[in-house]
Image (cartoon, rainbow, N blue to C red):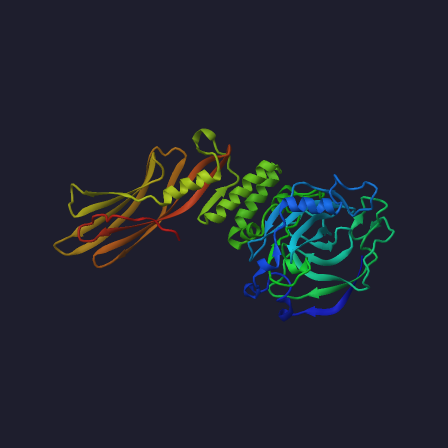
Length: 450
């Protein structure tokens, strides 16, 4: 492909109309402009256009060489509608391609969205070109990316986008069909450099830069190799990243989650990639997104004989929700040797067999009207099979008639979910109160969501 870098710089003011840096409040009733194409309508559309492999003439000159029946529908931001995605292969056997379908103004619009990496594809972030064509391979739009950031737009300068007679392309590789030639190598493409803040990302692609309409700022996840492909040299970890949604990638890329990201990469490097492992790790990631105080240990092998067993992550979520909603049993004890020393006891259930017990040791001198907190300690009790509790710290706040207490610690659970062992640790913050006149525990208290 020949590209000429134009002397055109898109500054901040103009980038507002480019990728997902647009303001959400500029959208105006997008549902009136685009709608979801159902899976059945997508199949009928492909059949009608003789693109379905079952109905296509094998002698027909075609850009698409195979069309998968594994269609999916991905979310569009700022909208309740979905974009229909059809995995395909094209005459360029090194491309990762999908047909995208959306109903715009009452008509189904379609494009072929292809990604070609100019690296060895072992890095986490995509570098290369994103090419958008019609279903017959005619060039419509293109973008170039470096390390997951869109840096330039490829524009057609001469107005033509016909295939040439070459059988290979120095940029896009060899064509699978030797007679098909390259659709883009000889195009006189200009390259418009993009400077924007925030920078446009590969995996956020705005719809009006793909389809023929200009209303709204909805985007969908265009993740590098999302859902798997036949691209060479994709590492097990990269294959996992490619299967994630935009929200999941953003969560994994948070600074606070760098240790999690490293742990997942090490896990895939050690165990390789299977669909079962990918699904399990993805379910872990989704679980952590909904439970920010939790952490999985990806390296530890759990003994199934000393673990809590769950059929699904949903069952485990219900288990944790019950812990968090547990109200304590309260008790009170006076030291038999020194009646000024009293203990307020709070018992929080972990399950029907085990609990976390928090004891607040106080000293009350009614003659001197003094109140003192001696210590706060806690321990697990009952059948602590597959569970440990560790207290990290405690704090108190003495008020005129009562004392507030905060106890911080973490529970570690030995789990088997769907037959796969895990260690799960979650930070718990317990809150409770006592009466400073007699040291009695006050009803209520429980886990505080930080």
